[in-house]
Image: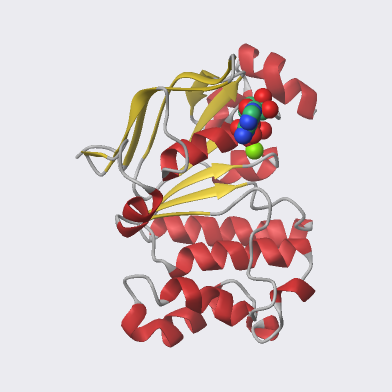
Length: 238
Ligand code: ADP
Ligand code: MG
Protein backbone atom coordinates (compact mmCIF):
# COMPACT_ATOMS: atom_id res chain seq x y z
CA UNK A 1 0.00 0.00 0.00
CA UNK A 2 1.44 3.45 -0.88
CA UNK A 3 1.98 6.03 1.87
CA UNK A 4 -1.10 8.17 2.51
CA UNK A 5 0.94 11.24 1.61
CA UNK A 6 3.88 11.28 -0.78
CA UNK A 7 5.67 14.48 -1.74
CA UNK A 8 8.30 14.23 -4.47
CA UNK A 9 10.81 16.76 -5.77
CA UNK A 10 8.71 19.79 -4.76
CA UNK A 11 10.20 23.21 -5.47
CA UNK A 12 8.68 26.64 -4.85
CA UNK A 13 10.24 30.02 -5.69
CA UNK A 14 9.26 33.47 -4.44
CA UNK A 15 10.87 35.78 -6.98
CA UNK A 16 14.45 34.54 -7.19
CA UNK A 17 14.32 32.91 -3.75
CA UNK A 18 13.91 29.11 -3.58
CA UNK A 19 11.70 28.57 -0.56
CA UNK A 20 11.56 24.82 -1.34
CA UNK A 21 14.11 22.95 -3.41
CA UNK A 22 13.48 19.32 -4.42
CA UNK A 23 11.64 18.33 -1.25
CA UNK A 24 10.57 14.70 -0.76
CA UNK A 25 8.60 13.53 2.27
CA UNK A 26 5.98 10.95 3.16
CA UNK A 27 3.44 10.40 5.93
CA UNK A 28 1.89 7.07 6.89
CA UNK A 29 -1.55 6.12 8.20
CA UNK A 30 -1.55 5.65 11.96
CA UNK A 31 1.70 7.56 12.42
CA UNK A 32 2.77 11.02 13.56
CA UNK A 33 5.33 12.49 11.20
CA UNK A 34 7.26 15.51 12.44
CA UNK A 35 8.51 18.32 10.22
CA UNK A 36 11.05 20.53 11.99
CA UNK A 37 13.54 23.23 11.01
CA UNK A 38 14.48 26.84 11.71
CA UNK A 39 12.20 29.78 10.98
CA UNK A 40 12.05 30.45 7.25
CA UNK A 41 13.04 26.85 6.37
CA UNK A 42 9.88 26.46 4.26
CA UNK A 43 7.63 24.38 6.52
CA UNK A 44 4.47 26.46 6.12
CA UNK A 45 5.12 26.81 2.39
CA UNK A 46 5.29 23.01 2.13
CA UNK A 47 1.95 22.78 3.97
CA UNK A 48 0.48 25.22 1.42
CA UNK A 49 1.71 22.98 -1.40
CA UNK A 50 0.39 19.81 0.25
CA UNK A 51 -3.08 21.27 0.83
CA UNK A 52 -3.31 22.85 -2.63
CA UNK A 53 -3.06 26.54 -1.71
CA UNK A 54 0.17 26.91 -3.69
CA UNK A 55 1.15 25.21 -6.95
CA UNK A 56 4.76 23.99 -6.92
CA UNK A 57 7.23 24.92 -9.64
CA UNK A 58 8.31 21.27 -9.91
CA UNK A 59 7.30 18.01 -8.30
CA UNK A 60 4.25 16.04 -7.24
CA UNK A 61 1.95 15.52 -4.30
CA UNK A 62 0.24 12.13 -4.03
CA UNK A 63 -2.60 11.31 -1.64
CA UNK A 64 -3.59 7.72 -1.18
CA UNK A 65 -1.72 6.79 -4.36
CA UNK A 66 -3.43 9.47 -6.47
CA UNK A 67 -1.59 12.43 -7.99
CA UNK A 68 -3.33 15.53 -6.57
CA UNK A 69 -0.74 18.09 -7.70
CA UNK A 70 -3.33 19.75 -9.92
CA UNK A 71 -6.28 19.43 -7.54
CA UNK A 72 -7.52 22.44 -5.57
CA UNK A 73 -7.81 22.66 -1.78
CA UNK A 74 -11.54 21.81 -1.74
CA UNK A 75 -10.98 18.62 -3.71
CA UNK A 76 -8.15 17.58 -1.38
CA UNK A 77 -10.36 18.34 1.63
CA UNK A 78 -13.01 16.02 0.18
CA UNK A 79 -10.31 13.36 -0.16
CA UNK A 80 -9.69 13.60 3.59
CA UNK A 81 -7.14 16.36 4.11
CA UNK A 82 -7.49 18.93 6.91
CA UNK A 83 -5.02 21.46 8.29
CA UNK A 84 -4.50 24.15 10.89
CA UNK A 85 -2.66 27.42 10.31
CA UNK A 86 0.38 28.88 12.05
CA UNK A 87 -1.60 32.06 12.64
CA UNK A 88 -4.78 31.20 14.46
CA UNK A 89 -7.72 31.32 12.04
CA UNK A 90 -10.90 30.80 14.03
CA UNK A 91 -14.37 32.26 13.53
CA UNK A 92 -13.88 34.60 16.50
CA UNK A 93 -17.51 35.50 17.06
CA UNK A 94 -18.79 31.95 16.89
CA UNK A 95 -18.80 29.72 19.95
CA UNK A 96 -16.26 26.94 20.27
CA UNK A 97 -18.96 24.39 19.46
CA UNK A 98 -20.14 26.29 16.37
CA UNK A 99 -16.56 26.58 15.08
CA UNK A 100 -16.45 22.79 15.07
CA UNK A 101 -20.00 22.38 13.71
CA UNK A 102 -19.15 24.44 10.63
CA UNK A 103 -16.55 21.83 9.71
CA UNK A 104 -18.55 18.78 10.80
CA UNK A 105 -21.56 19.83 8.72
CA UNK A 106 -19.43 19.72 5.58
CA UNK A 107 -17.70 16.46 6.44
CA UNK A 108 -18.43 12.73 6.38
CA UNK A 109 -20.17 12.91 9.80
CA UNK A 110 -22.64 15.64 8.73
CA UNK A 111 -25.69 13.48 9.46
CA UNK A 112 -24.70 13.25 13.12
CA UNK A 113 -22.69 16.48 13.30
CA UNK A 114 -23.96 17.54 16.76
CA UNK A 115 -23.07 14.27 18.49
CA UNK A 116 -19.80 14.01 16.61
CA UNK A 117 -18.79 17.53 17.68
CA UNK A 118 -19.76 16.84 21.31
CA UNK A 119 -17.38 13.87 21.26
CA UNK A 120 -14.52 16.04 20.00
CA UNK A 121 -15.25 18.79 22.53
CA UNK A 122 -14.99 16.18 25.31
CA UNK A 123 -11.86 14.65 23.86
CA UNK A 124 -10.17 18.07 23.75
CA UNK A 125 -11.28 18.93 27.29
CA UNK A 126 -13.20 21.97 26.00
CA UNK A 127 -16.62 21.18 27.51
CA UNK A 128 -16.39 24.08 29.98
CA UNK A 129 -15.85 26.63 27.20
CA UNK A 130 -18.02 25.05 24.49
CA UNK A 131 -20.50 27.96 24.56
CA UNK A 132 -17.87 30.72 24.79
CA UNK A 133 -17.02 32.93 21.81
CA UNK A 134 -13.68 31.68 20.54
CA UNK A 135 -12.35 35.29 20.69
CA UNK A 136 -12.47 35.03 24.50
CA UNK A 137 -10.11 32.04 24.72
CA UNK A 138 -6.42 31.95 25.59
CA UNK A 139 -4.06 31.27 22.66
CA UNK A 140 -3.41 27.73 23.92
CA UNK A 141 -7.13 26.95 24.00
CA UNK A 142 -7.70 28.65 20.66
CA UNK A 143 -5.14 26.29 19.15
CA UNK A 144 -7.01 23.32 20.58
CA UNK A 145 -10.24 24.61 19.01
CA UNK A 146 -8.49 24.88 15.67
CA UNK A 147 -7.28 21.30 15.98
CA UNK A 148 -10.83 20.33 16.96
CA UNK A 149 -12.21 22.02 13.87
CA UNK A 150 -9.77 20.05 11.72
CA UNK A 151 -10.79 16.84 13.55
CA UNK A 152 -14.47 17.65 12.90
CA UNK A 153 -13.84 17.04 9.20
CA UNK A 154 -12.75 13.49 10.19
CA UNK A 155 -9.55 13.71 8.13
CA UNK A 156 -7.38 10.82 7.04
CA UNK A 157 -4.50 13.28 6.66
CA UNK A 158 -4.14 16.03 9.27
CA UNK A 159 -1.56 18.83 8.89
CA UNK A 160 -0.84 20.80 12.08
CA UNK A 161 1.24 24.00 11.84
CA UNK A 162 2.73 24.82 15.27
CA UNK A 163 -0.35 23.66 17.21
CA UNK A 164 1.39 23.78 20.62
CA UNK A 165 2.57 27.40 20.31
CA UNK A 166 1.05 29.32 23.22
CA UNK A 167 0.09 26.20 25.18
CA UNK A 168 1.27 25.82 28.77
CA UNK A 169 3.16 22.60 29.70
CA UNK A 170 0.05 20.93 31.05
CA UNK A 171 -1.91 21.69 27.85
CA UNK A 172 0.99 20.36 25.77
CA UNK A 173 1.06 17.13 27.76
CA UNK A 174 -2.66 16.57 27.15
CA UNK A 175 -2.15 17.51 23.54
CA UNK A 176 0.48 14.79 23.12
CA UNK A 177 -2.02 12.19 24.34
CA UNK A 178 -4.60 13.56 21.91
CA UNK A 179 -2.18 13.31 18.97
CA UNK A 180 -1.32 9.70 19.82
CA UNK A 181 -5.03 8.95 19.99
CA UNK A 182 -5.60 10.42 16.53
CA UNK A 183 -2.78 8.32 15.09
CA UNK A 184 -4.16 5.22 16.83
CA UNK A 185 -7.47 5.90 15.05
CA UNK A 186 -5.53 5.54 11.78
CA UNK A 187 -5.05 9.22 10.91
CA UNK A 188 -1.79 10.26 9.25
CA UNK A 189 -0.64 13.30 11.23
CA UNK A 190 1.98 15.70 9.86
CA UNK A 191 3.20 17.95 12.67
CA UNK A 192 5.20 21.17 12.35
CA UNK A 193 6.30 22.14 15.84
CA UNK A 194 9.12 23.97 17.63
CA UNK A 195 8.53 22.24 20.97
CA UNK A 196 11.25 19.60 20.58
CA UNK A 197 10.19 17.64 23.63
CA UNK A 198 6.74 17.21 22.12
CA UNK A 199 8.16 16.30 18.69
CA UNK A 200 10.64 13.77 20.07
CA UNK A 201 8.00 12.23 22.36
CA UNK A 202 5.14 11.77 19.93
CA UNK A 203 6.63 11.39 16.45
CA UNK A 204 7.27 8.09 14.71
CA UNK A 205 9.35 9.75 11.97
CA UNK A 206 10.88 13.20 11.71
CA UNK A 207 11.90 15.17 8.61
CA UNK A 208 14.26 18.12 8.99
CA UNK A 209 13.97 21.04 6.60
CA UNK A 210 16.66 23.71 6.31
CA UNK A 211 16.78 26.46 3.68
CA UNK A 212 14.19 24.65 1.56
CA UNK A 213 15.90 21.25 1.59
CA UNK A 214 15.34 18.08 3.61
CA UNK A 215 18.68 17.59 5.37
CA UNK A 216 17.75 14.54 7.44
CA UNK A 217 14.93 12.12 8.21
CA UNK A 218 14.38 9.17 10.51
CA UNK A 219 13.07 8.18 13.92
CA UNK A 220 13.46 10.78 16.73
CA UNK A 221 16.34 8.90 18.39
CA UNK A 222 18.38 9.19 15.18
CA UNK A 223 17.46 12.83 14.46
CA UNK A 224 18.45 13.84 17.99
CA UNK A 225 22.05 12.71 17.33
CA UNK A 226 22.39 13.86 13.69
CA UNK A 227 25.32 16.31 13.40
CA UNK A 228 23.78 18.20 10.48
CA UNK A 229 20.54 18.69 12.39
CA UNK A 230 22.36 19.75 15.53
CA UNK A 231 24.27 22.35 13.56
CA UNK A 232 21.26 23.64 11.60
CA UNK A 233 18.60 23.61 14.26
CA UNK A 234 18.76 21.63 17.48
CA UNK A 235 21.90 23.42 18.66
CA UNK A 236 20.01 26.69 18.45
CA UNK A 237 17.15 25.13 20.46
CA UNK A 238 19.48 24.04 23.28
P1 ADP B 1 8.69 28.33 7.95
O1 ADP B 1 7.24 28.00 8.04
O2 ADP B 1 9.59 27.13 7.95
O3 ADP B 1 9.11 29.31 9.00
P2 ADP B 1 7.95 29.64 5.47
O4 ADP B 1 7.42 28.55 4.62
O5 ADP B 1 6.96 30.52 6.13
O6 ADP B 1 8.97 29.04 6.55
O7 ADP B 1 8.90 30.56 4.60
C1 ADP B 1 9.95 30.02 3.80
C2 ADP B 1 10.63 31.13 3.06
O8 ADP B 1 9.78 31.65 2.05
C3 ADP B 1 11.04 32.32 3.92
O9 ADP B 1 12.26 32.84 3.43
C4 ADP B 1 9.89 33.28 3.72
O10 ADP B 1 10.34 34.61 3.91
C5 ADP B 1 9.53 33.02 2.27
N1 ADP B 1 8.11 33.26 2.00
C6 ADP B 1 7.07 32.59 2.56
N2 ADP B 1 5.90 33.01 2.06
C7 ADP B 1 6.19 33.96 1.16
C8 ADP B 1 5.41 34.79 0.29
N3 ADP B 1 4.08 34.70 0.26
N4 ADP B 1 6.07 35.67 -0.51
C9 ADP B 1 7.42 35.76 -0.48
N5 ADP B 1 8.21 35.02 0.29
C10 ADP B 1 7.61 34.13 1.11
MG1 MG C 1 5.81 28.45 9.42
